[in-house]
Image 1 (spheres, rainbow, N blue to C red):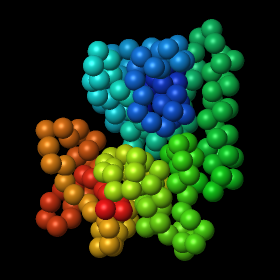
Image 2 (cartoon, one colour):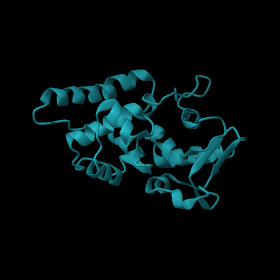
Image 3 (cartoon, rainbow, N blue to C red):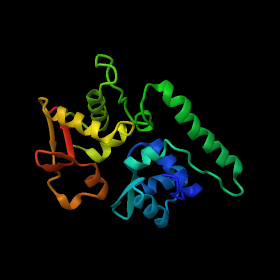
Length: 213
């Protein structure tokens, strides 16, 4: 990811979206934090797949994408002329979240650490059970049991695990009672990130997971 040439402002946008850990409107970012995400910044971060964006009325809805969560595990440059103390503070915060807090939290990734609900596998599950982590991540993302959750939203919680291992865990899970993995019925709504996160299963590309149906 080195060489992505992120500016201090673009790096700061990633930090805010990490802290929010949800889809948030640009207008809300402006009103709550005074953060204005301009079109060139949004386009660049979307092109890098660090941010997922979609039009929502007169504004845009933004969310840290799978590669964005992975990018947050590496150093960011917050150097900004005339605001060296602010840049130093953000650099220290990111480094210590990653190197100290994350290790003590029991979470495997920053996506898990900032999830709005606890996504760690229950103690009753075998230590390090990947299937249990998938289920826990689903429960954190689903509005209710049986609700559809896109694999694009799920994968960042497992960014520390090789893609092939996650895919195999999903395939095992699909054979369990009450679990459905299915393609998006309206293919026109799929983004590049949705396509990239799809799971090949049953001879087709699948984009959605439901547990508890």
